[in-house]
Length: 130
Image (cartoon, rainbow, N blue to C red):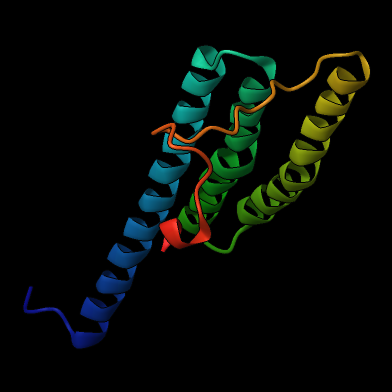
């Protein structure tokens, strides 16, 4: 076998770039899922845990599905993953909102924030943030 033709080398480069893209998407989606799982376990109150769970749905799973869709190419599998992703994109935030609304109606209130700054020198002036 002789040296590869320029067209074949170009296709190999595109394949490598697509593989890198899909692995980057899947790894970033996995990162969001793992961080969301730890957040659900470690956060102190219901509202923080609900936020961590919604990040897992919104960012993690959708990035994983996009990565798998890029990896599989233009096939029926990609279409199915797209439908699942659209379903997750609509139902994830909707279910999180429904759970938060049910908790709020049942009397569970978010904790009040303390308006003090970290250095306790009083409120910050707009010129302090520049």
